Amino acid sequence: MTQRALIVGLGIGGMSAAIALKRHGWTPVIIERAPERRKGGYFIGLRDEGKNAAAALGVLDVMEKRTPEHIQFWDVRKDGTRRRIADLTQETNAPIALLRGDIEEALWHGLEDKIEVRFGTVPVVIVNGVTQAKVTFRNDDGQETTETYDLVIGADGVRSTVRKLVFGPDKAFFHSIGTMLCAFPLARPVIGFKAGDGLMVADVKRTLTVFPLEDRPSTALFSYRTKNPEKASKQNPLPTLRRIFADLDGDGIISRALEDLASTDDFLFDSVQMVKMPRWSQGRVLLLGDSAWCLTLYSGMGASAGMIGGQVLGEALAACPHDIAAALETFEARMRPFIRKHQRFIALRSQLFVPSNRAALWGRRVLWQILLRSRKYLSRKST
Image (cartoon, rainbow, N blue to C red; front, side):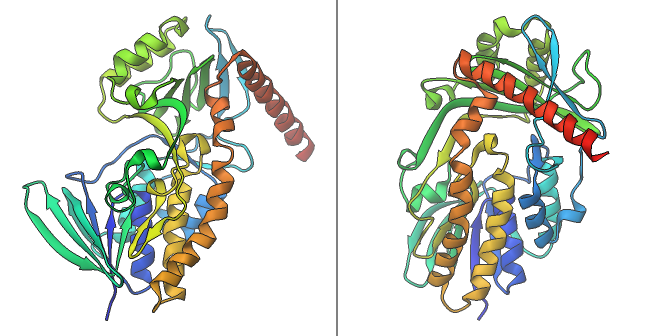
């Protein structure tokens, strides 16, 4: 008999898992809280690990690539003066620049018309059994139905409903970085900069970073440090950012970016939280992606980890077709080292985006200059 999996969340991790499970003979069903598929989103630099996972899922070649042909980054000071720094998107290899929505669009084409998707639907009760899980759903009309699945996969984001229902409250697993972020597409080019230019306006505990994209508006990423991120996440982002960044706007870059925020509903505003759990599965329920680990935007690996997780889960279930418990053990054994590796450096990487003191601000400026000089040297040497 074909095994059925319920996947909660139509994001990168959920769709990746659906494609992988379908390939290995499962029948996945996806439910999504939103009334329709989300599009757009913010800048993502897809590195080698993510490229390899996308290729394994069969979607890399159909992904829209938006890497500017001529890219350079600038450190912009309060008075508007600027200095060239290393490309923030390239650390160890050349990533593909794209929007989060480009990845989701490619994954959607990989599962469209092959897998059942129910919009406007959320789980309200999950009864975890020995061999199956019984799930009660509620749709936007308030109607409730109950179905049974061989496996339930929570891929519904950092504030996962599945995690709350089965594993416990958010506070048991959240590890705050002490920062907030707001990411959104700019409505127009940054005045005084060329196409392909990125920039960072940085001060102690607050930063605006602009990531350029080819044929699409650049992504603005505001980050700032706060003692109470959870309280801050409930505030209105526009007046909050205007207040926090007011005296950092010497040349109008920040105020114009916030004008663009005021005219869009396509933005992410939230506290930055890692998720750490002793186990990602319990009985017939598994967490995947941000629900399980949340590498945060600072890691540069969140989307990649979602695709890798879906691919690895499919392979683990295929290797243990008659023993789901063993398959989930295999999944954890393969994914844990990768996740630990990237979570280990998130607090340090946050200093590159949002320096917590004057020493960190000075250090990141020196580091970007060293990286820029070393890349110029290696480029001359290779030619």
